Length: 185
Ligand SMILES: [Fe+2]
Image (cartoon, rainbow, N blue to C red; front, side, top):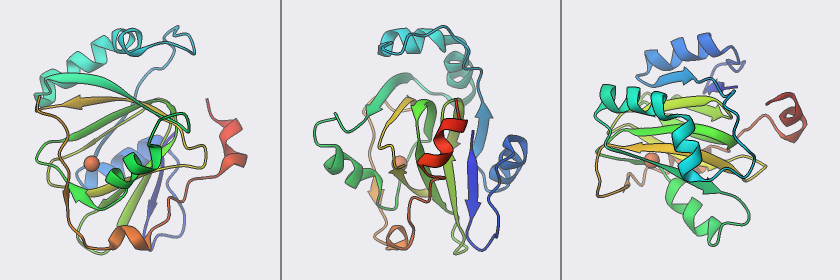
């Protein structure tokens, strides 16, 4: 279930179709994918990519993505904080950032340049595409855990270009909080 917060807007958008409409208005693609694949809890990268093969192939064709992988972050990840410090500062890429959340939670912050930061909290079943050259950054939620499929247009890998704007220092992750998590799949 996606939760979208817009700076200056009183209430978050929690309806998926309304969230999709708003995100489309700022150039971000959002989709809900069917997560009823019979995947075991301990499914590995190959098994997960195989389960979502048709969705991945559709996106590859649409967006020119060449490769897909699985990122798996949790408290057990060696150097988690160091890794997060690369994601949680405002940056852009010269390729799209495409993420489909398998489990856990995270928040993508989008700076559309009008001093209104949009925060997109994602969880199981949420696919977002942040177009190349969009200013953004990423935080984990309180559970400090996310598994997500990533798609890439460039085989040389993920290169962030940092803006140094300091916008990221003004924003907190602002997830719905642990009390809300049991309501989600
Ligand atoms: Fe990024």
